[in-house]
Length: 331
Image 1 (cartoon, one colour):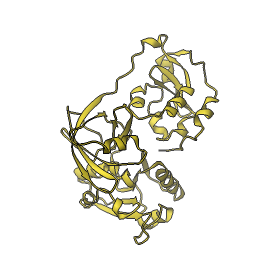
Image 2 (cartoon, rainbow, N blue to C red):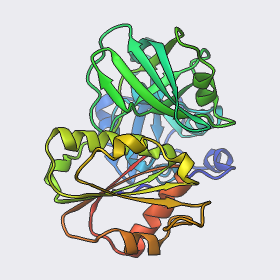
Image 3 (tube, one colour):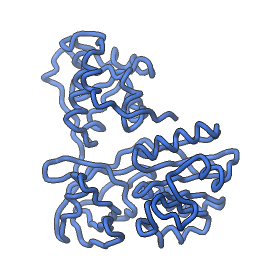
Image 4 (cartoon, rainbow, N blue to C red):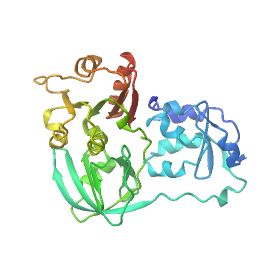
């Protein structure tokens, strides 16, 4: 599974000069659109518009699979459920080649189910990260393993987060407050009793980890949350083989879910700190780290989650060492 690059700063200008297959006023039937479902010929429908995203697949910051899973289909609900900046929406419009159906005005935009939850507890974890405990106003469908939800602020801006716990009407998140993080700053400003909106679960992860004899998990910072979700699923299914987790942070004080991680008897946990030379291993993640501290075997799954530059570094390393394994990057 390939996860490719990040749009350049002038991506909107670049794509604005890209030739389109037809004038934006042209109409296409759903049957015709459905035929364009290959990596080199990929069309999607968003809010009644038809977009040729073939060349953009390799530029999507969330990975090509997030778009390609909707090739030839309507992806309005998934698109609206994720946070997209004005620039991202401008890039999308540059790829428009027409509309779906002869009467686009009659197109009904699929709704994105929104739920409400009430904040009942805030727990300090590190200097910039807290656990937020919510109760749901109404029952929500089970969140599949490896999937996430989007939390909305008062302006309906949104960002995806993976719950660290979900059962019944209780849901918990571990969230780091980034200085320029629109949603993280909003959540960190909340007091118990506040009501927050969230979407249904979203995600493309479908692998059954019980089918793999050996598993590597590689996390950077708050990227531990979806991997922790995988670990919980493995434990509930009585997974008996060893799982190796390489967990990168700046310092020991930045480690999240330390107590929770210690409870997995099948887990070999290796910490790596980029700003603490007294600990080993240390520094930014490298090929030497992977080859020294993780055991290369057959029949492997590798799950990776962290900031985009971190994920790209890990992806490059896995290619360098020619690791034959099923891979999934949570982004």
